[in-house]
Length: 90
Image (cartoon, rainbow, N blue to C red; front, side, top):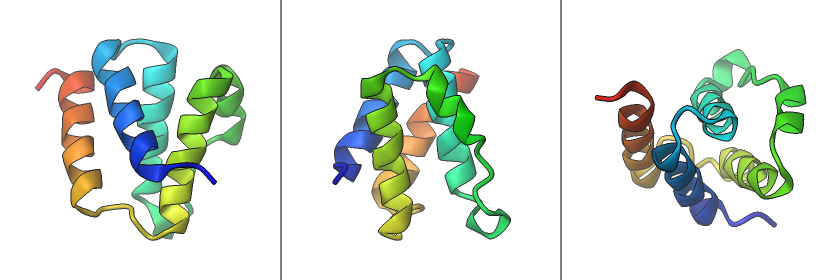
């Protein structure tokens, strides 16, 4: 079991700390694609290889959140706004 709330907060922290890092950009891409369930959440799974083990655990927690039907809830939307600000600078 992957703790989904922890994964979301950890993803935000990684993205805010180093928005240009490979881990941050990969997690941000995953977050973006999880919002498009109708399109099949098209995330290239081989990108998980670019993450180290702790960051992969965060990615799995984010995917578990999808399985729980918790994409787009209040916590998700707040975290998503913070990620957008960190990545896009505004």
